[in-house]
Amino acid sequence: MTPIVATRIAINLGIFDFVHDSLKEEFKGDEIVSHAGGDPLLVFRILRSLTAIGIFNVTTAETYKPDPVVKDLARGGYLASRIIMNFDVHFQIFAKLPQYLKETKYKSPINAYAGPFQSVFNTDEHYFDWMKSHPAQLDAFNRTMQAGIMRDNAARWTEIFPIAQRFQQFMNTTPPSDEKLQLVDIGGGIGHEIKVLLDTFPCLRGQFILQDVPGVVQHMLPELQSTPTMQTVQAMPYSFFEPQPITGAHVYFLGRVVHDWPDTQARNILQHIRNAMAEDSLLLIHERVLPDGAAKVHLSDTIMDFSMMVLCSSLERTETQFRDLLVSVGLNLVQVWRPTTAGLHRQAILEAIRADFPDDE
Ligand SMILES: C[S@@+](CC[C@H](N)C(=O)[O-])C[C@H]1O[C@@H](n2cnc3c(N)ncnc32)[C@H](O)[C@@H]1O
Image (spheres, protein in one colour):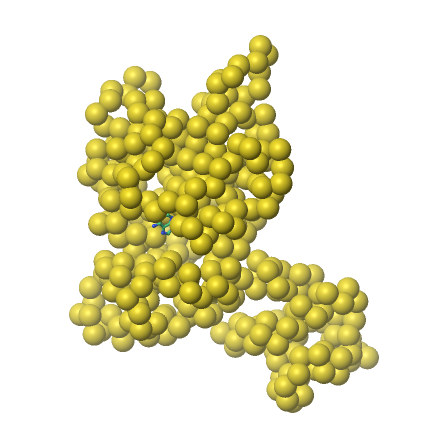
């Protein structure tokens, strides 16, 4: 716990920004102390804590050599974003969760607008709405979401679902065809899942629609805005609690959205998608799918499940829970695609179609 506290304070003091931006290999302690400001004794104690966890290596000449991890701890870096988000929000709630659950008679939280998050932050806003007026938290959240997908240890959806095989007719083939894949990424954040798709399959012809709330969608990834694919990616402010304006798309994609919501809201989101789907539309849900029993669960599944509990009064679902949820809104779960790579088994793509059209595959 202590190292993360020291790291959070060092982020505030701009220590990692200074060290990273300076592009030097070694620093005198005084140099870092005078840049950071604050009581030299305090800054020294923070540096000592950072050294103890390997962020700095102190030479015999008492100079501080930063570890390469400093890049991720500097402004906008993956670890900086994650630490800001975890420290400022998650940990604040976790510290009070035992008391909260005692007071609420140990009921699993199910109210997205009155749960542990609202109790600790003294608000009746949903976590996502609250972030709109807390830009540093929103930025940290979006960067963490983006990094979670881009980092090597996460399973990309393009490695799980057989895109080349299923969307072959939309690839640039000879003879060329004009058919375009219409894909709607609902609650797609700043567009990293679309980016993964376009990076993996640059020859895919499509019309890609990125939907999210206005404050988020306006930050669509610059890569998506500045490349030739730009014409094919449209950012559309939209709330998934409203009827879906794009009907009959080939693919409706929901990445890490359903786990943010308890069943009441999850059903509402899925119902709007179902109503917009045509006979040949697919719904692809990219989520962790937990085992039904506790035996094979992974530690990270339980960490994420508790995060969903405290932030959103929601949960990570098992395959049975997903199937029941989908059936309850008239959708059939056709297949659960899991990565073949060992260690990435937690991520899955759930493929669903409308239940009122026969599945002829
Ligand atoms: C956990 S993030 C997932 C983002 C992205 N799909 C991914 O996999 O990284 C959930 C997303 O849902 C969005 N969201 C929350 N409420 C929404 C709403 N009412 N309508 C549309 N998007 C919403 C958030 O802004 C956020 O980008």
